[in-house]
Length: 160
Image (cartoon, rainbow, N blue to C red; front, side, top):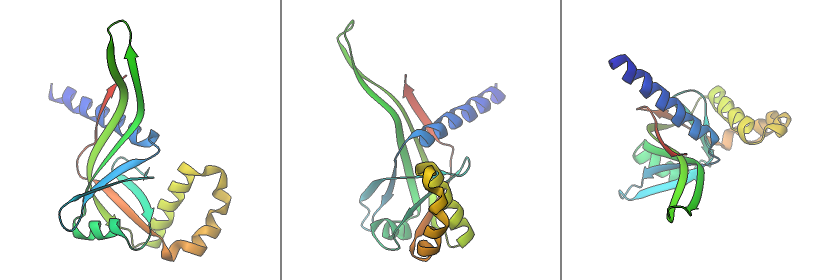
């Protein structure tokens, strides 16, 4: 029985990760210095089962929040279809969603930054990848890359 539950949790985590992979934006939620919430949709890419990346400017509210508290929540919706079901006179919505908790850290190793930025380019602009080396040369030193390492398995929900 325990083995079956573990296998099901693994299957559920894999499904939730696939939601993150399909979502064009992932909302990253964090806390401001005053304790108020701050959530922002970002373009994230996943390296493996526990590692996500995004890039941003060297300064700004995201960086201030993460320096104050590195724990973040990420959430995504990869399918969202509102529907009126005539037979039952019911309003409903079909969706695929996922959420996870992790720790965010600014990447300081240039090789890891380049790997993360390459993954982002390959996911969002693959047909322009031949321009990647020039962009890295021009802007690596002024681009911040943030790594989010999941601290617990992601979970997802759906209404197909």
